[in-house]
Image 1 (cartoon, rainbow, N blue to C red):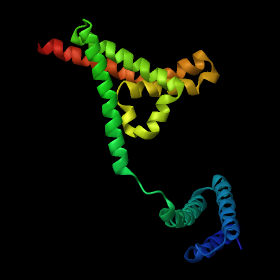
Image 2: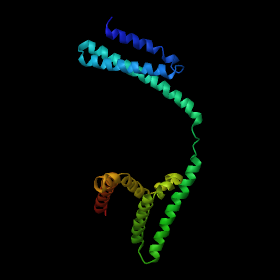
Image 3: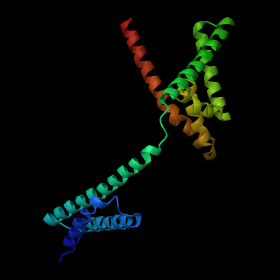
Image 4: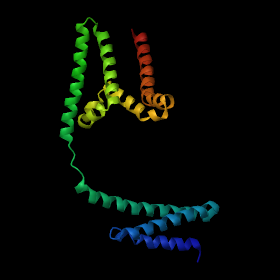
Length: 217
């Protein structure tokens, strides 16, 4: 009997295990999975050396073995979800929405108070907005460095990723994670991994808007 035919028979016999796969113990499952992997590697080696019609037949056999392996994995995945589903914690969507709204609004309110403070001290509205953005960026980075902003994120959720402070947090956090790699290839490189796309996008969009404004006025 040809070696290819032996593999086909083994493949066919494993198809019968699909119906009782859930009832099998882990050791038996592992043995079947190892057998599938070995057969798959064997067929790949034969396929690489074969030619013509034989190569096509081996390719079909390899694809069938792939599908069989995925079928077993799918059964395991569904069974895991079935068992883990009742044990999974219930989502707290309403609570998360309320906290995000509260903390996001609180950060924006603090920003408005800072703006009002700058205006009260003589800055123009436009200059006060720029100064406020600088203060919030510094605060987001500073509190990220202290670990306070990450703790806030555990409760605030999406409310902590409001523009400016959230962006400052993402940049500073990336830099802190890479500080062991040095200040240039670590901190500096990681800073621009996050900030780079934003800077490029902002620059390109500002140029386009400027051109549109220039030609339409």
